[in-house]
Amino acid sequence: MAKYIMALDAGTTSNRCILFDKQGHIISMAQKEFTQYFPKPGWVEHDANEIWSTQLGVAVEAMQKAGASAADIAAIGITNQRETVVVWDKKTGEPVYHAIVWQCRRTSAYCDELKRQGLAGMIREKTGLMVDAYFSGTKLKWILDHVEGARTRAERGELLFGTIETWLIWKLTKGAVHVTDYSNASRTMLFDIQTLQWDPDILELLQIPASMLPLPVPSSGVCGMTDPSYLGGAIPIAGAAGDQQAALFGQTCFEAGEAKNTYGTGCFLLMNTGKKPVFSENGLVTTIAWGLDGKVNYALEGSIFVAGAAIQWLRDELKIIDSSADSEYMAQKVKDTNGCYVVPAFTGLGAPYWDQYARGTIVGLTRGVNKCHIIRATLESIACQVHDVLEAMEADSGIQLSALKVDGGASANNFLMQTQADLIDAPVNRPCCVESTAMGAAYLAGLAVRYWKDVDEVRKNWAIDQTFYPQMSMEDRKKKLSGWKKAVKYACGWAKE
Ligand code: G3P
Image (cartoon, rainbow, N blue to C red):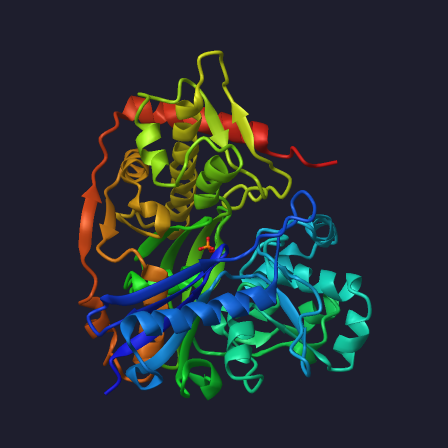
């Protein structure tokens, strides 16, 4: 019997491959960052060919590190940055334009137009999403409208659209399979989350030819085989899910009311709401968690656009830390932020504010504020944003979380996790394996090929590494959060003409 499951984790700034064994242990891992393009303020692009080549490269590397051959891999699960749009030529496989990344704000004005036309209600009812440049639909329309010849070629059936998992599956199968999983489809703003079909009215509204869309399939199930030329043999591709939904699965939040928060490039808090979609009154989106065993699970999601990216900003742009890990040490060199607040709204604000025109802001600067205060305020801003989303989620679901499960790169930061527990006034549980995203993809694929028998077997792999208990006084918490809310007001609307 094959020994491992391979997870391909195509993130926003890097691609990774992890091989897992049956107990959920990491056997080997390889990672490679790829280029970020910022052609204009607020615009973000990737080179889809670079995404493919780095993803394949890390898959080969992870296999080499483990001394594994294709026969050792029972199945591949894919998880990916969601909403990012690739359009390519069906025959040549060449993308017609850079991938437009989920963070990109270029279609904000068009989204405003849709709202002005009173279409937000209809779109929300069908897709579970608010009209925002974040989601794929308007990005796809932008490519068709702005890349020379793209619309005509798409109408002739020559072009294909996909989010990143679709693109990778198409590449891995050498063009044989053009599918998307339900969780990724639910982020496009083109997909009816109850009928599980592309919505003809929205397609017409955005003038998107149905022929370019992938076939929606469940998140767990064999959808194709890798071309043997890539990994030394044909391996079943047996699972795919957007990274946040995959993390919910990896954290074994299988029951309604279970929730997790992932600290990646952004921060995404998802709560499983069971077999029925719950529509938010408080700025959260309704999304498909996964399709598994012939059933669909839904989730409420609070999407925060910038979290780990703010720490990268401290490192790469401000250059006030040498590595992301330094932020933990530097933040604790001072006892507080000296009254300063950072609102890292670099690409607008997502949940629960949904302000496309918000921009990054630092307030409360006085002569005594130094770089450690700014570093501390940046870390605190991540925890404050999560607090706001959790508040909205508890209001929508009527469930008060007894503890928050966390994962993702920045969950390794103990200062941030302690601050998180303090601000939400609830314990924060960090599991032993914080690679929940990759793990979720592995589980979805492994369940499809019976590598794991059922979700109960999978649940046994989850264990706590550390719990952070709230320590802050009520008074301090209130003060911190009211200062934060005031700072958010300054960030809102900044980029509006
Ligand atoms: O919706 C965007 C999200 O999928 C990106 O995730 O992990 O790259 O922050 P991440």
